[in-house]
Image (cartoon, rainbow, N blue to C red; front, top):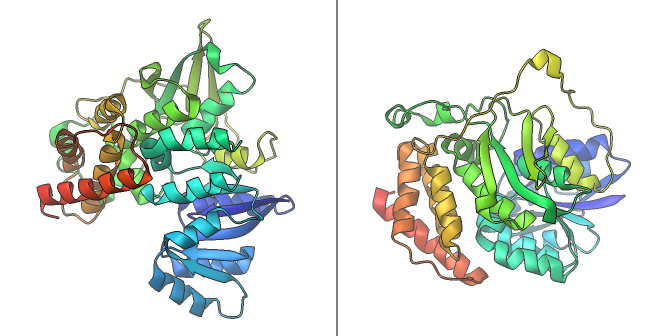
Length: 383
């Protein structure tokens, strides 16, 4: 049995991970769960998967969960200390981190220091702290296994081939629900419109990031760390059908792609069972029925999120943290209808302009930059 500590179990990736566990109950076991505040769903997960330990990040949620699960015998913790304990639980073989935001950095570090392989579905960890995470994983002999569909696709395309023969990565994007719209049209977008992704079922934050192309910028930065490639060797290609999840081009001109129907359960399963593969009860790809695949260049003029991410990556240091932290605050404000859709990328640009990047920041400095950036953005928009 492979024993799993799952952080972010009540979110989109977390719930799909538990579906994979259910489908392979003879080989996968949950030993720890963690989430922010969704107590009713967590109570259901406890009764079904019987973890030894659970963490609810918010203390009030932890107390409510204790009431809901009285008599189950599960140990319930709270706060960052609780997340760290869950992430580094001794009996866990692998920690899958699907927490949203920079809250995932410290638990990931703790899991690595405890010798756990990391199945990574938290972009912010590498975007903001890749210069800390990747050397630490190498030091402890820990594998970082990508769970994002694009990074899993790249990883699968590289399997069995030397990364040194890689010429460039072709990172695909769906283009989101507003592909083809102008900047003026985007100013009229409402949260309920932005949450209707054409191909993927994701959480609210990631869905908004996809609509603004900020998500693709975060993925470019994450791919740079995962595969040790400069971002100028990562090309974003819009593939609207979301069938090709990414590609790699080798030095001889060969391009290898990974294709499947859009489902997160496949990359989750690949990470959990690596280096083996298992049968999956997912819909099979029918290329003849699909008919064609189309490709476009990303529209960085009307969707500047990607260009801003590349600028942040090029600057380096603490600038990617500013990009990410500003986006987190602004997406939340947009979902609460306090700002417009185009204010998200405008606010990111304003925060980056006001920041002087610090080289190679430590964890405490990263978190301080996050706090300062949030204050800056809130002052700009009065939120």
